[in-house]
Image (cartoon, rainbow, N blue to C red; front, side, top):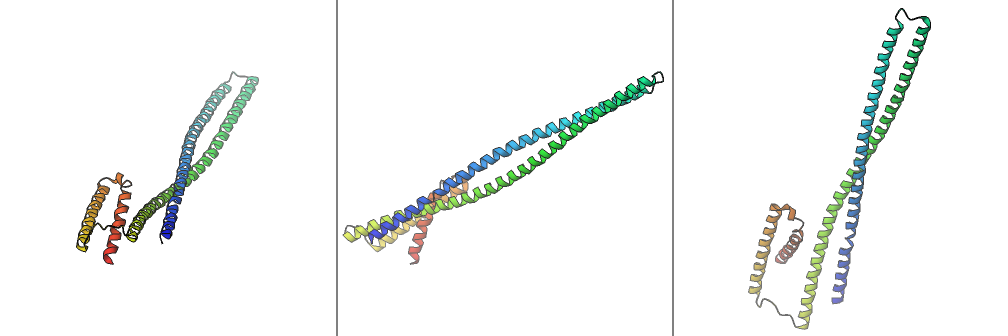
Length: 243
């Protein structure tokens, strides 16, 4: 019987240790979230720079067209003067057409640059949106895993407490079997009073812990172990009373 109990305790210890694998998974997920957030920030800066470049290109294009229009008006006024002969007129007209073609060529070049900027901006926008979706999904996964991890920690703590309780019971049974067990309470009346006293002390401590949880939420994780211990002990005491 004692060997079977030791085997069971060893199995429970092994199960609680294996739950630590969740910690490694949680760390990997948080690392991935950080990597994607860094990439997202880079994309946002790249998009901002691209928008600024595109605005400068639009301004350059507008300046070129404005200068071309102004020069065209000046040249037309010059050509229209009566003292200019036919040869000079043709020369000025050719220069005007050349200037217009050059301005149109430069305007087309900037139009193409603006089109390319817009295509890049669209791709960046799609990639940013995709990264936002990925980050949200991973954050949700991290949140779920954190909840599961806390649950595993609770289970591990409960299992460890049960193991310690069973070890203590096994020690008592062994002492009782060998005739070495000495009861703390000599009479049933004394035992009942001691149980009531212990239960009252535990309830008072549990009330203090609950109050600390409310007044100091930052201590909630630190007090988790004590809460589980008291809940387990109180539950065991209630079962004993019901029986």
